[in-house]
Amino acid sequence: MKLLFLGAKSVVAVLCLVTILAGCSTDEETTAPPAVDEIGSIRLKIDNVYGTKELALGANFMTAGSETITIETLKYFVSNVRLQRTDGTTYVVPQDASYFLIDEAIPASQRLRLDNVPAGDYAAVTFTIGVDSLRSTMDVTQRTGALDVGGAAAGMYWTWNSGYIFFKMEGEVLAAGTNPKVPFILHIGGFGGLNNPTVNNIRSVTLRLPETARVRAGNTPEVHILADVAKMFALDPVLSLRAKPVIMLAQESVDISRRYASMFSVDHVH
Amino acid sequence: MFTRTILPLMVAASLLTGCGSPTEPASSPSLFVVPAHFPVPLRLGVEALCTPERVALGRALFYDEILSRDYTVSCASCHQQDYAFTQHGHRVSHGVDDRLGTRNSQPLQNLAWQPTFLWDGGINDLDLFPPLPISNPVEMDLSMDSALMRLRQSPRYRALFRAAEGDDSISTSRMLKAFSAFMLTMVSASSPYDEAVVGRTQRTPSQTRGHTLFQQHCASCHTPPLFTDHTFRNTGLMPSDVNDLGRASVTLDPRDAYAFKVPSLRNVEVTGPYGHDGRYRTVREAVAHYRDNVATIPGVDPAVSNGILLRDSDIDDIVEFLRTLTDKSFLTKRELGPP
Image 1 (cartoon, rainbow over the protein chains, first blue to last red):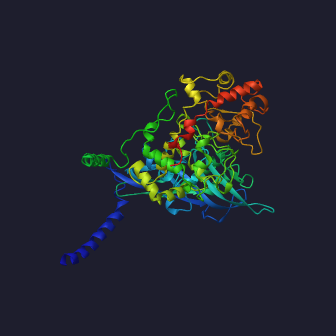
Image 2: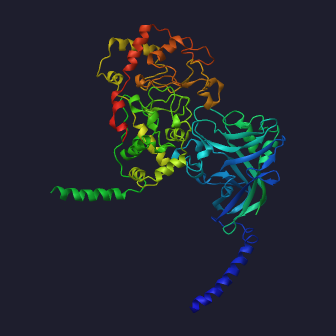
Image 3: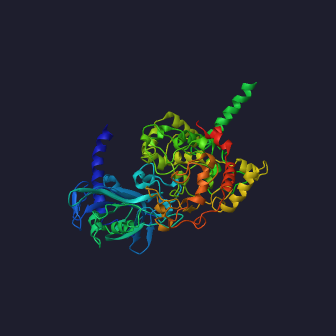
């Protein structure tokens, strides 16, 4: 009883100490060079936006080509993450732990946490938008998690022409004249083909970080990435969904993947 | 005496099974055997995959309407054993609500030797075939996650998965591997043609003439012993209103427009109607196509673009020869039928 009573006091004291230590960590622990074999974690937060606004599903947005659109579905794969250190060396996230499906409707899907990252100072992040060709042809036992065709990836897979849909955006575009709303469907995939070469929409982006991300055992930086969908439409020449509202597996898809690869930037690191 | 000997054996057997890791059930003989006169299968590891327990699970899935939205259609609805796993008499396949597809269902046989699947070769891996008919709105119209959910709620399937995989966890890949295991046991290699090849039977004079004509005019694409070279060719079938582009819808290469997979001719007598859209009712009409109906459209394969010069009696003989490819044991084998 006595012990317990004392305990409560010490707990408060310990808590205070922890808070102080935690407060210190960003200054002292992260500027010191990392210990050999020290590992930590890093978070990537991917925020889908439209220009200066949050991207809200169902809201109206104006494209660079002056078309009013509403977006109902926005999903895409992020994979094969690599982190470049300030000294130019690279840490490649183990492939099995490097597939993510970003879904605008599921906030948790927009926060990627990479664990077991070697402590270090990181200056840039590289990732693939889509699924690499090797994994796209792997045995079904290697397609788990985000890649499970009977689970998370069910709506992101072409069953009749085996391959993942890398990027899916669906919604409506307000058209002129008597037909006010036209549905648009962008299903972009294509890993290059197994037996015959075909479209390859595997795109990779490298984003420099405005501040160094210092990964330490006691410090987990968060890289805040913006995916600005407005940029997809603004890229020259301006994209018109009214002119071509449906693009799936076709040569035109290469232009769409070029566009969405341009929409990523790092806002800040904290 | 009997019970005394059998009891320790049973205990020993259960102990032995217990030793295996949960994902590695006790090894059993494979139900997949490569016929002596066949080449090495393209697919690796088929013997190991086709354990009796996994094949039994695949067979249960193949014949079960639980995998269609309204519990009315199973894989076997469009792939009937008596007709070498095609849908007899249907130009194109019927799904739930009697919805129609655009293509004729292909036979399921000798799949371990097949590099691609579908008329256009859109699928490269048999394991990834079932999600297409299961989720296709004009076939079984059930999402894959709903399909897995139904299986997980079924005590019968939990038992079948446990027997096949060592525990009753039901995952996409376990389900798809079981489907493959069963379908890979659909090996047709015991037709009168095969008997003649190994010298057990003699061909009739008409079959012999037909065989000679076949070697001369057909075998460069329909190459024995599988009776296909697995290529995609435009055979000059005049495109219909559906305007099915065939291989080009997969490769996006205009040169592949209207090219379709060269189908195997094994069991061709029972797999009618013929052509990717089932436009020919009889084997005779399908053979006569190459003499009478090769359309002048761009991209027709040079092997057939000028038509094949055949007398009526030649066509009769070729048809007689093709009948020797009917494998009665394959079409009636109990193990390939409903469980």
